Image: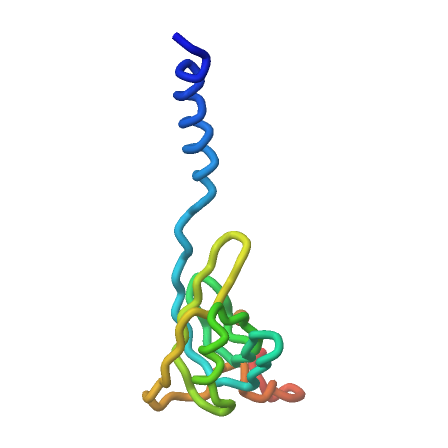
Length: 119
Ligand SMILES: [Cu+2]
């Protein structure tokens, strides 16, 4: 048997092992209010609600995977957005207007002052 044939199974093994880290991205859906669109940076700042199992409510910026998405984002608008998360990256991949009325995200509420707030 020639050496090429003898090595073929190992080449296949290396190929399979190198594919292992490609875990499919996790999809997460969040809701929030658009604060700012930073087109040059492909980013949008959103005051988002709690995303169960991922993040508490906060105001933060997300990188959009497709810059065309930015055109659908208007500051002040309430949206429902989809994130794709891998071990290394987090992208906002879809967005839609959230028609449902709801309270503002907790991250937008003024912080309690003095001793009047919670504990
Ligand atoms: Cu966040």
